[in-house]
Length: 74
Image 1 (tube, rainbow, N blue to C red):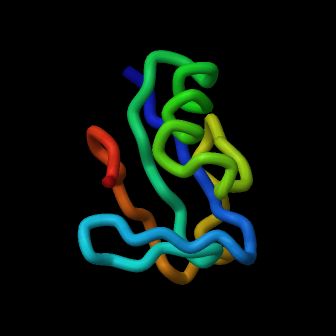
Image 2: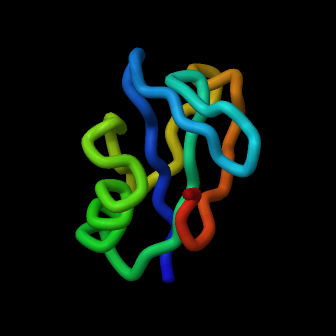
């Protein structure tokens, strides 16, 4: 499994384990490859996310930090 990072758009807000995540937050997931990471992102968030990264994004743009998403968030 590899680590992938997901960012959210300006109007995308979700609640994961009681924590609100939005465009200031990076979500971290584990997947076999980028295609699986994309499938999981759509499964978890529908079309309410922005980008799936293969490398950790520059965190100075995301003051909300990183939230790990394990096994889905719902």
